[in-house]
Image (cartoon, rainbow, N blue to C red):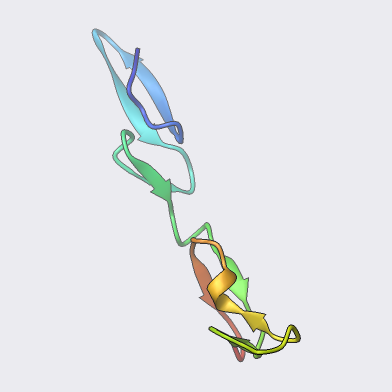
Length: 74
């Protein structure tokens, strides 16, 4: 049984195996994580802030963990 990461491909070799991260993931094949150059969300709203008193604005403290790219007036 191989020990490749679940986001990796396993290639059988004679008496062993090689692990390679899948496209858009980086790492050594045993530990793969999303490549931030391919896995991000755009934040383009100019009215973003870490806290607001009203529901009319977007509060960044509720964003999920991940990679974000700020574009425009964000």
